[in-house]
Amino acid sequence: MATINLPPGFQYDQVQFYKKRVPPRTQPTPLGALAKLAGSFTGTGFNTIFRPNSGPPPLGTTFPNPVSPTPPVFPSDNVLELNLTKETVTFSQPLSAVPNRGFGSQNDIFLNGVPYVQAVNDVTNMETGSADGNATGIHFETGLWMNIPATNNSPVLGDSLVRMASIPHGTTINAQCLAPTSTFQGPPQISPVSLKPFGVGNIHSKIELNSLNVQDSTTPRLPQDLSKFNAAGTITQDILDDPNTVLRNSIKGQNITQTIVFTVSTDPPLQEFGGGTANIAFLLGNPGATAPNSNAFQMKATFWIETVGYSLTVPVFKPGQAPMEISAPESLSGQPRPVFLVSPPYEITSPKKINVTSTQIQYSQVVFMNFDGITWPHVSVSTLIPSTPVPVPDSVWS
Image (cartoon, rainbow, N blue to C red; front, side, top):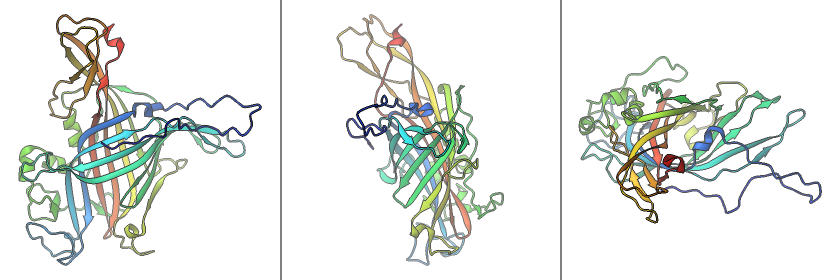
C-alpha cells in the first residue's frame, strides 16, 4: 500500500515573530469537498496509452504477430497499451492553514488541502483475460489537493480546487476548477470518453485505427490478441469505444445515495484560472522541434465522490467482545467491497440488520500527448473504496 504521512505535529500557520500582540492561532481553513479525501483507498480500473514506437526492428516494441507496415511508418509508429489495473491512493492529514499574501487591496487568503500518493499496478493476466496477473508498477504520483477560498479583487474568482502532481516520466501538472457547491442525490451520470486520436489542433477530425478493433490481433497493440479479455468482459469493443464503460459497469446494482462531482483541467476553462503542464527535455524533443517524443501538453480529470449505502447483517454480539469486521454484500459487478468495523453498544441476541454508508471515489482522466503530428488520448479510469475497515458510527444504533 502506498503511504504518506506528515511529520508528527506538523501544521501550517503564520509564523509568529513577536511574543507581544500575538493574534490567535489561525483556524484551519475549510476543506470543502476535499474533506471526503481521508485515509487510504484501493480499487481496480483500466488504463490505456498510445506510446511512441521506434524502428525499424530490432528497435522498438516486439509483437507476437508481425505488424504492417514496418515501424516506424504510420500507423505502426505507435503502440496502444491496455492495462487492467489495481491501485492505491493515500491521503495524509490536512495541512491546516497555508497563507498566501495578497498585494494592494487584495486580502490575504489561507488555503487548506491534503497531500497524497498514488500507485498503480498492471495486473493483466494473458492466460485468463482477467485482472489477476502479477503486479507490475506502471504509475506513481505524488501531489496535493488544495481548497482555495474565493477572492474579490485579484483575481475575482469563487472558491476553487486545485490538483498539483508530479510523475516519474517527467511531467508535472497544475489543474484547477471551481469548487462544487452542492451534492446531488443518486448515482453519477458518466459521459463517454473517446480513445480515437486526432491531428494536432483538429479535435473534430478523428483518426480510425485498427488497434481500436477488439477483433484485430495483428495490430500494434499490447495485448495483441484480446479474445480471452473479450470473453471475460474485461476488454470489450464497448470498452475500447468508451473506457468510461468500466466505471458504469463497476457501479451496477449499487445504492449510491449522493454524488459530488468536479472536473479539474490544465487548460483553464476561465481566464482567471492558473494551471498548466511542464515536461522534461526528453518528452519535448529538440528545442523548437515539431517532433517531440511525447509531449504531455494537457490533462483533464473528472472525479465523482460517492456515498454508497449498504445493508449489513450483524451476528449475535455481547458487550466486551472485540469489534467485528463485516464485509459489504457482494455487488453485481464483482467489484471489491468495503469492510466495516462493527462494535454494537449493546447486546445483539439475534442477527440484526443495519444500514451503513461508505465513501467511494471514481475518476476518469485524459492526458493528451503529441507526437508524429497527432494528439493521442491517454485515458485512465478507476473505482476506489476504503482500504481499511470503515467504523460504523454510533448513530446507526439509535
